[in-house]
Image (cartoon, rainbow, N blue to C red; front, side):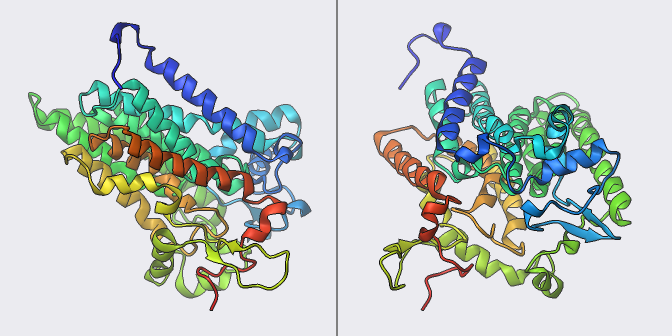
Length: 429
């Protein structure tokens, strides 16, 4: 599909707004009704925003009973929210206006932000086209961005609203905006700002730095005084990033007495003993995490009784290629360029910490940690001279159907029989 008249083609911002509107509408239609009625059960970011408004880095009281004590840290006789805090900063004005965390419909706010990531990814894809590094038309780029929003685990993530999934909504948007600013090394300071805020949202995003660095090297190579041009770009990139990392170090020291202590070891969670034994990150976790990412499938349920579903999914979620079969196209690109390798390296660096992390994403429809690096994989799809042929559209449609099922069934009481009652990875013997 080619543009008929480039002069009459809608501008990138207009197309991005359309992508945002359509994906946000899909998220709204498939979200639980409870999101629009009140706060979520796990509104940690709103609670943290409320603490800041009271001049405290810790919660001003014990966690509310409705949260069930889930994923709060106890240290120094006080309670803490240890998740990276930028999503809480977004809620500060809402908590202030509402007069308290329990008066803020946090899930609805994050639902309204969920369309930003697909829209920002479209802008990055359009930037690739403008640089002559993608053959996709604006319409095809918009379709690919929509497939990210509806054909990956981002869809089930976007409709949850609770603390773990809200971080992915904000993090994916920042990852896409970082990629947009990094392509051609065109916006060094904005790239550094997005990466720093990404770290303050989803810590693995810090490892996406290779994309800008390699793009800066590529662009500076052909310029007069190449070394000076490269140093200037890297310095501008490092300035906001370094400031945000320094702020994180201060924040850690102010809470837990060390710039390197993020507080996860103080979480009051059922797998705390596992963390004490093996640490937050260990080679011990790699086989299980790789197994879920590559080979976790639905299985036939052998439990007796008419109420048992004929087949089930493990709470660890489905394999990445099951939820997004379009990723298989990455294995057969039509070309390889320096940017291809930069995108692959960036995606691998972001994915690596999660592979050694102490849980798989725990309770999920699919590998939710892939939201951290999915924008880079979708840019790699466009770089591979991908054309949205009928075959690829059909593969993408399968992904949409799978993730529609995930969006409307995950964490809905009437569908819980589809999920194993334990956190085992594979079908029981």
